[in-house]
Image (cartoon, rainbow, N blue to C red; front, top):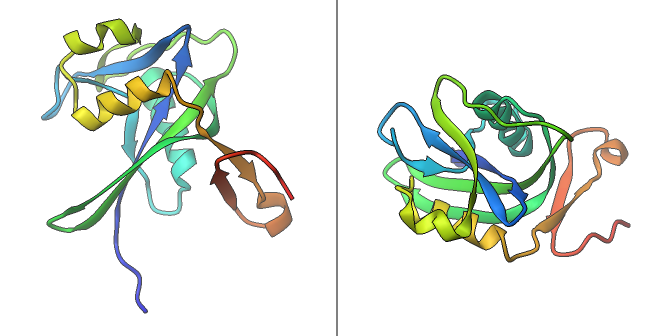
Length: 159
């Protein structure tokens, strides 16, 4: 059986005081639209590391992945596409600030979500549900395995 090339995207979902960190795109086809800090996974990069890199690049803050809120999958003209939305906690006392590709970063309350122009309805759904759901927890078996090896599951029992 051969492997399949896949379009792999990621997002960092940060919840604070019943609000979610969102970014307003400054360039490209989604200029002026709001969404989560997001991007693509580079060759040789774990998806969770890509989410943290994108958070750094777009918002100039550091975080730690604590789980997964959502996975979106679909088929495109070039093949399968998967998008993973990671639960991320910011390192203490950090204030997100916009990069050159981002017009604005802001913690936004769910009460304001309907007023925003969203990148996609899926992005709005992920942000909305992050306020009421518990993400899958992340267990890191990398040390035991000797290479990056993460398990995301409902519950956090490590054996």
